[in-house]
Length: 295
Picture 1: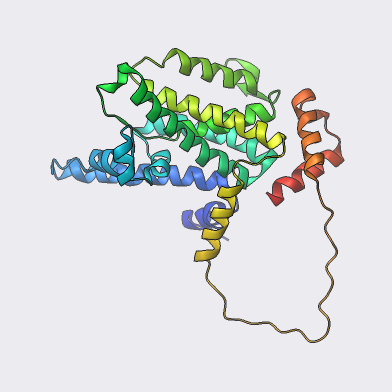
Picture 2: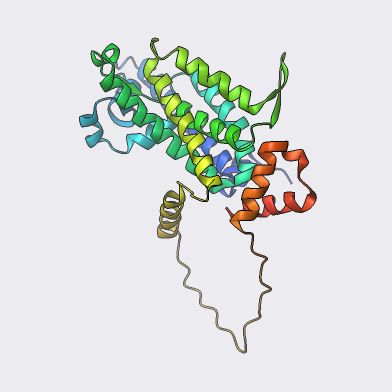
């Protein structure tokens, strides 16, 4: 049976529970929309500069706290907006690689938590830096991009499984923790550069990713409230069925699913941190897989 691009999109994005695919698709989709706006603006020589106007006044996260009062949604929208193809490509590559790892171990809900809350943390650190350091006070910039969110996911993955090894072209095998340290040091060295605000946002995202996993390992999910809120929104807009099903006789008893305790998961994560994923036996891998599906 022949499938169309739209069929594939529905299978792998719209109807899929894969949050990573949805995040990638949303970022790419927003980039295409702004690209179309830019193209129309230039083809008809309108000189309206709609693309820049929308980014600076509506979806970009401002450095001025007063402006944030008039567009509080920008703490989310800025995370899906990019400036140029290579800006998008870089962020999506980091998100794809780190997101697959984090999703494998913790599931879709926690990946979404790290992405959104890491991006929000990056925005807050950006705003603080712009209003604390004299170097930035003369300007009134805004930020866009998924960099803080992607770095938050990378930092979370590196904190969870630091010995996870990636094979980089021209370099070879490198542990995830060293890749994260490379980005972290690079951001610190560029704090006073032309994109200093962006690098402060990266650091905010990275710190959140680290703190999120450490808190999770201590039994505290910093994103639990966000999961509940998103679930509430999904239920709010979910179409309600008018079909009622009545049963005659006793309802069939479903076998109880074995419960997986947080202590079991924490013990497995500790083992991964010390000895790597390959040190797990099949039972431990099965427990981790089931836990990720539940989350």
